[in-house]
Image (tube, rainbow, N blue to C red; front, side):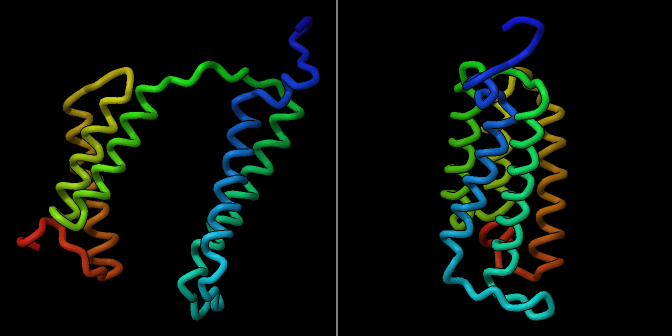
Length: 157
């Protein structure tokens, strides 16, 4: 690679291009799995309206990111760092298993705690701050704002 120019296959192996393709793939998956949900109208939204709009937005952003990556230089893909991928995945699985049994608050605490172990730095005060802020925001949005029938702490509220 002379003069910073990329050619051929290397153009498709940049982080930005592959990220854009990933956004498009997730958008297509969301459209596929949500195709049987009623969309409705912007005034009377059906259960498939928001997922479909989010999927279309993801696909649009993925397309933009991919095209920009093809015309501008970017960083080449490195070997994946497995620790963050594994810890975030374990955190999400634990959240899913705890949500109905323990409630939103304990599930969020476990999710943030485990996921934060995947980072290069672990600062307990920042992790606790993230837990508190996320718990407050989720409680306000889902329990108070949307009135969802979820327990914050199972058996308490």
